[in-house]
Length: 385
Image (cartoon, rainbow, N blue to C red):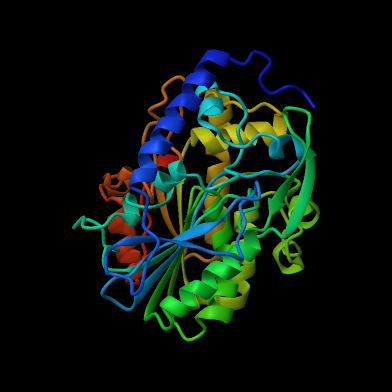
């Protein structure tokens, strides 16, 4: 396999690790509390799940917020992906990010990862611009690299040459989290199943289980995937042989666009009973780097790779509209602030940009709030012309 980065920069890696550790230490002082007794409303709690497991074998927890309503958001978190021995040996660290070294997925839930999961965008409390402020939330965290669907222990050789095992218990974590959700929120009147990045891929894969096994009586259901586009020809093999997902998850994979395949399969079961939404960034700097890696074994992005991603998004939008013309789309082009990488940002739903007005003069918060009520519209499609 070609070396992704032949000239790694060690000094920024050390600086990045120091910064991450410092932020993590500070974050641990303000980490969401573990509940003692009844949950207070409008407070984020961290709930350890003894049956859960992170990719490196460490503890697993979810986040929960109780609100004064009968509405519930099940949010599936993102955090990268591991699809072979090379990527499994390279989890995310602050040092690798700073140095531009390959880093593919979060393999644990250290305090630093709290800032990825709560208190911003759709999970922000007390912001009058957030139409979901008064919703109950369960955030199903992610530290397994398997799009929340895996059930496997995969041996690999670490970067230091030692033999290690990456745990892929994403589906087990999901089931444990949903059991907790059902106990806390037994009968939601309205349900939003949403996710960003890897969690956005998982939305159509897991929505059927959520509805069938946990909330069969809920009739007002909206789905949102944010930034979940990756064209890869080995999706079925990965889901079947690496992650060991349930056959129902991989048997329906027919193309190199996993998200479209899963939505097509889901629509075949539920039709127009559900509301279907997709959001995406036109030249996503991060997903375009993933695409470059799965296609050319080069973990990097540039204007040419981002243009390929842009053309693929055009195709993806057409394919989603073929699933159902009622598929609602929010396309955005917020510039990536890491200017050397170029392109546009990765995800918006759990970012400050959730409230930014996009190309069509509407924010994702406004678009999603209206769509959840049944007023589905497209925003930003001229960006794809």
